[in-house]
Amino acid sequence: NFMPILAEAEGTVQYEDIDEGKTMRLEVDPKSKITRRVIMEHKGEKHPQIVIVDAKGTRLAFASLPEKAYIEIEDGKDVRKGDLLAKT
Image (cartoon, rainbow, N blue to C red; front, side):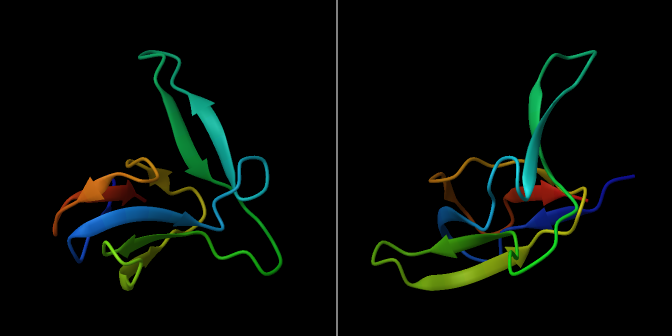
């Protein structure tokens, strides 16, 4: 069973410390062939999170992403409160 990580505000998604090959890897589902973004085990100063900002770039909310979380939203997308951001 997955636990959803939901948007706590309305705004635009910004990835923070989500870097392919460092904190995130692409994984292809063998059945559906869909490519998914998965948070990897990582060390150091990186703290992968999805930040929600308003039109002026002000941080409204953020969601920290634990290891093995599946990112369900693309960087730059607009979200509403309650939208699915990721699953753990």
